[in-house]
Image 1 (tube, one colour):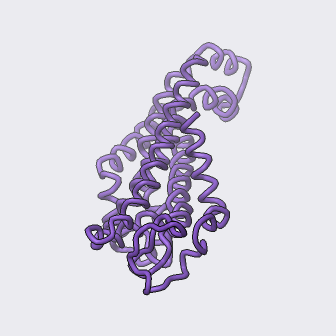
Image 2 (cartoon, rainbow, N blue to C red):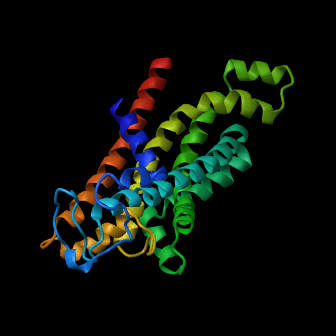
Image 3 (cartoon, rainbow, N blue to C red):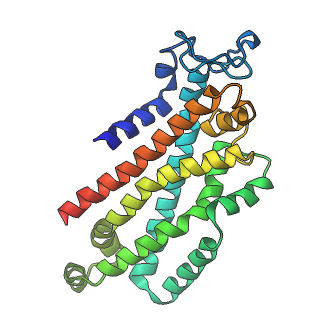
Length: 265
């Protein structure tokens, strides 16, 4: 229940930041005043101001959109690839399995952050879409291997054999019988993957390799705050708190989905 509330709230903030940013202050992350540079939290501005005199609360709220969008886009992209490649590998086996498995092992040999760090380092455009695409390139193998293993466990069950004996085509078997009964563990992993990707994007952006201005994200706020932490700790505290809560929410939601699926089986 707590996980669902956190995820729904974070999703709402990401989708409609304007509804939340106006609760305190002027609600515009682009309106700045150097006269209030690095001022701490106050009654009208509970998160204080950053170095440029921009409202930290408004920036944190608007920062949710880019961070969560990357997490969702990457997870959806990896999930689509996993369902296609993992199902083909697990269902057909043989040559298809060998090719897909070896390919996934190649990408698994490159850590996600390291691979993204190298590839993003040579790209000039580091928008939400570019960062998401790069993370998909290095993030799909894990979900694919889980999909393959669950499909292997399902493809030879009696109801699948019965449908095959009745003349069902392979595509129909995979679509109606194999994937629906093999997708449970994949969905659990996909849910937790959203949180992991959000953290990965923030890490890359903090290192200066992820999203770039004029984008607004939690990672950019953390990167900008690192040199002023001693004088203005609120600049690091609030973005990192929202980042941690978002990641925790998706991780807990994954555990909740797993518990629900376990009870059904």
